[in-house]
Length: 236
Image 1 (cartoon, rainbow, N blue to C red):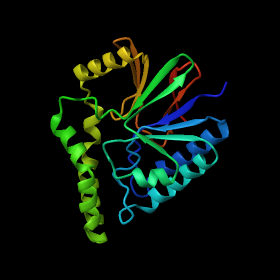
Image 2 (image 1 turned 45 degrees about the horizontal axis):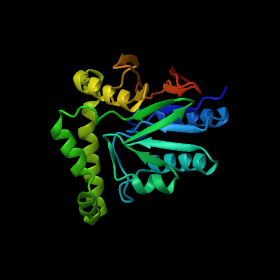
Image 3 (image 1 turned 180 degrees about the horizontal axis):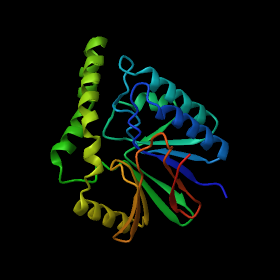
Image 4 (image 1 turned 60 degrees about the vertical axis):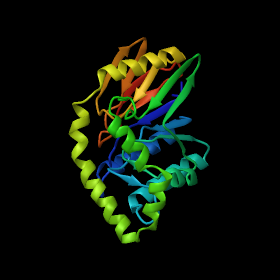
């Protein structure tokens, strides 16, 4: 029986990344398998600023590949990550749905997908930064800069974020995660799929089965959701 969805998380693609070719093979496998929904849990690139002067050739090519899928009738859902800025327009042009959280209906069950960076509500500094850095005001000011200055700032942000990968592998806000799971249970959600933390793990919290999706790499690590709502890890 055909899966309901395939899901990948946190590739953090860099220029000339070897995992990009794996990702395109994964997209082709998804298409060939006849799966109706593709879910991307954010942070496709080391940093993605979706403004014309800053977008890279890799980003434009990947958007084109996603656009081919949506044009063929596949649903592609993107969950905004902590490395994604001003991507609303390019994703919309490719027919990709952008959310902070999204639910898939699997029979009588709902499966919640989310990047994961909003779970730690105790980190108020990050939450303020996330809101301000993606605001319309910052977007407008960024667009006023010369193209060369936009690219220089993007590269500076990319270098800064490249140092944080190891942090997410060792960090998980257990108290806030339990509180988040408790809220899901109250909504009737019993399965959740999370990126951001770069771990291959499943846990049960407050009656919710949480599947953490490891970082997509050259092994093509991804999660498949079956018609009964079960989320299992696979590779290419």
